[in-house]
Image 1: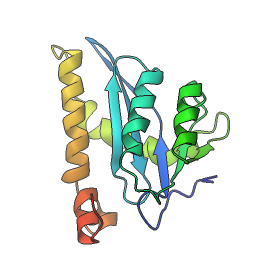
Image 2: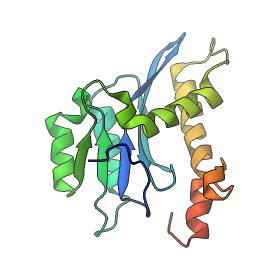
Image 3: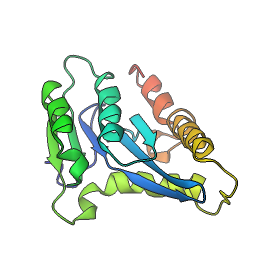
Image 4: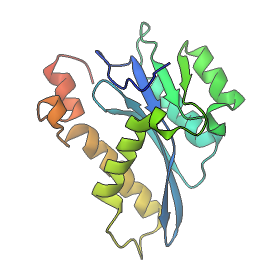
Length: 174
């Protein structure tokens, strides 16, 4: 349904999600975010040590709590098993959300979400020595980065404001 059109005129019209993996000496960490196409704000996210239903379902549950009664975003994902599990489908349907999926094996269909992962990894993960960092310590740093990304990281496309500041500037509750 998204058809690679990752632009939105208002918040909560188009959301993107996927899972990315971080390999550390101490173990693997997974991030599951929900990203709003309006301004790139990470609406909700979950971080864990397994890419399982709990990771994506808790992220979706948190995202749904941010909606008003009239918000019904299209939720776009790849074709991963996480987004076809009964618990995910039940949550999408119960909230009245519209589901969209990429074509099989076509990563450009979720390019905006992949772009977020690329920025995140370039800015806080790559070129750093994570030896001696615990999984819990990394998860804390990742959580802090996403909060910083939403509240402080400026984007030229948002008039050199962060997503939260941009919404405030437009008079949109954050």
